[in-house]
Image (cartoon, rainbow, N blue to C red; front, side):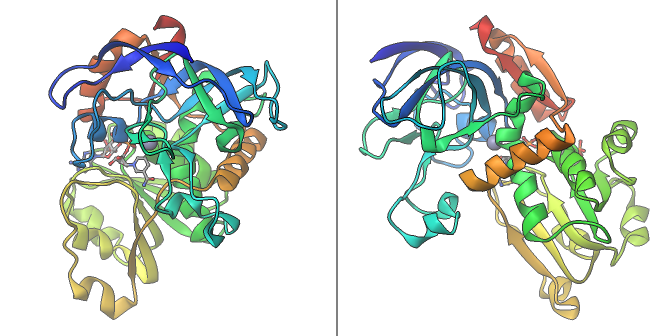
Length: 346
Ligand code: NAP
Ligand code: ZN
């Protein structure tokens, strides 16, 4: 048993504050990671503020974690002390059913989230990356390509895989027209990864204030959704729309932008139900789907792809004590494009 220092939420309405807690003693198949950087995902804010109704306090958020391996259990084969390692959104899963073999373990009920959850023993709370260390089974840790900027790699562990997985599943590539709705933490990774896959990327943002960045990151087109003309100009245009918005939007208006057989994929998770009209789907055989992060195998594939294409997140590095201010800025869409906490400041 060792102590870790971090920041925790103790209540839905209070700011995060310093928190010291125990990390479990490493088992044979565990590695200990000395955390260096941790990204701030909008899901952290949803959970800290109990917007999904599942908050467990005290909560140490953070599921975009990178650091250096500081110890390994006797049975560990994938990592050695001194290696770079990452941890994403989950730290355990069902290992017995066939889904694990299909590399879809993140969709199984046995999933243990990196924080705001309990370990497989049913009692030990999981605490996330806003801290200085973590103990994790080696099978749930990722290898980080050496050539990538370390701090800017952290957001790949959630934002990166959350966009990579649907881009692969819906076969984005040359000849495919893909829209990314929302140019935030997730959205800007969709632009970079989608463009690297060869798809033609259009950003649909609330305004044109980030247009120059969007085009620089790889988008071919950039439209403001506050302009009603956008929905007329782009009607029936896209093979795939990846929606990263965490709030209510006019869903049926966006569905009208899909081609025949096009898919609208929900990645953002707003609090309320999504009202979809049958006429938005039926006459063009369109579909609405959802997608959540990716398996460990696919996350490693994404990291290797990003290593090869030199893709990282655009980040603003902050001190741990700036986290509450950073949350307010994320809520105002005032982040370019991911806040990352420097764990040395804890
Ligand atoms: P973020 O950085 O806040 O980005 C969300 C973007 O949505 C904003 O930058 C903004 O883009 C747009 N937006 C915000 N409010 C809007 C509104 N009222 N109307 C229209 N557009 C609006 O958040 P994030 O970290 O990317 O996360 C986005 C969502 O994905 C959250 O709900 C999060 O919980 C969820 N998430 C899901 C998964 C998954 O596995 N499916 C994984 C991680 C996160 P513009 O300024 O360009 O309009
Ligand atoms: Zn996340």
